[in-house]
Image 1: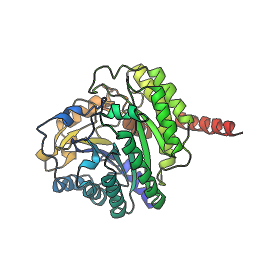
Image 2: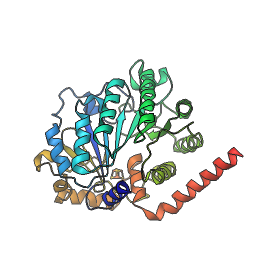
Image 3: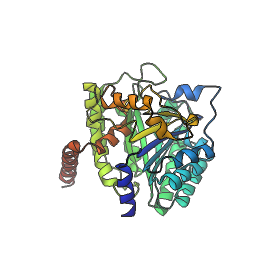
Image 4: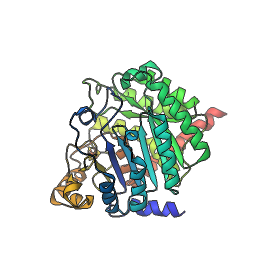
Length: 364
Ligand code: SF4
């Protein structure tokens, strides 16, 4: 109950509820569809925020609920445990997600175990990228053996989950021109047999290889609905307050994403820029991962993100978002924005009830 109240307070406070932190731009994969490839390929990388700098940022965001750790490859940041701990202790986060390609099993397991130990009230979702099965996945990642490594990491995470219910395991497959329904369905069935939940992520238009964005949204929606029907054997999700409502939103969001793409506008008011903000590894603060706009750099304002968010420039950026001057299909923000949009709740609940009825009907 305490964590539920803490999350509810964070969700409806006056400062961001969610922070995406690109902990590093170093990566040991070379994915065809990567939207962060410019930073990853750069030879002269900017200086990453040090742990001391991260602690100062965390102290200035005292009401966060949810932290997304990503990159680059999250596990390539040596002090990622201390980074998570800083946000737990200074910002009060109660949910963190750790995004990984699953290559560095020992480091990932050590990181996640230590985060769970040092942050006793934190739920940790580890999201492993699994696009397809076997060599197809290896080709998409640009690394031989990538699939076997990811699966081995998932097996180890499952053993950890059996000992600690605050750990959740998810996988994600990118839907792009060179990874379509058949390959993703094969991966999804494979993962369902392992008892792991899998979702799809729609290619971003900033991807590395031209043409990857050329996808059919009707196929995307059919795939999303098909994946919803194939449930994993068992459940490796974290046991935590609010997760069942989050699940309902997650299973509804495919419809919103497909509708948003076809109608080319925000269908739920986007909460990026205030409820959710994005911090780059070098301290650059963005309203979201997609909008080509920057608030500034936390190094220039005493490591206080809110000073940038509330600046004249920050307010102008947010006005543009509120006025729906942009739209996108970024899954995390579509789901989070739905949470802040009660008029959509009847559709979310209706969708969930339809699913429950269909599952019950299939089992008869
Ligand atoms: S609609 Fe998309 S691009 Fe626009 S602010 Fe929201 S998340 Fe960013």
